[in-house]
Image 1 (cartoon, rainbow, N blue to C red):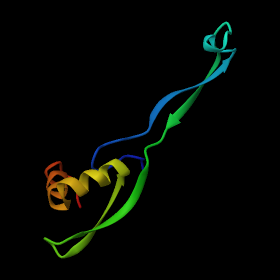
Image 2 (image 1 turned 120 degrees about the vertical axis):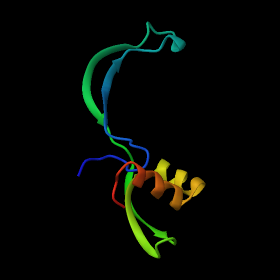
Image 3 (image 1 turned 30 degrees about the horizontal axis):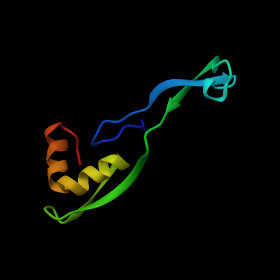
Image 4 (image 1 turned 90 degrees about the vertical axis):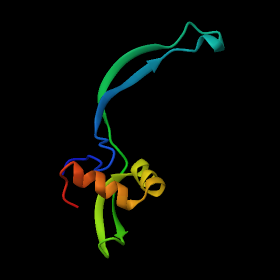
Length: 91
């Protein structure tokens, strides 16, 4: 299963990890220099969570990010489920 949030669509992104040497100019050095770059991945903070859906009197299980959980607290479960069903996702 891919690491994608069902609500916000957040997914794994790519970036670099930098190896840095030197003494900062603030500390009277010549400055920091990048001596190497290594590819890395940034993973979203995903959890599998059950929510009570009172309109259908049952639990729904979603895989979402922590930011999406805050969005669900703000907007409510019913509006999120309506948006997901409009996109064609089975919930």
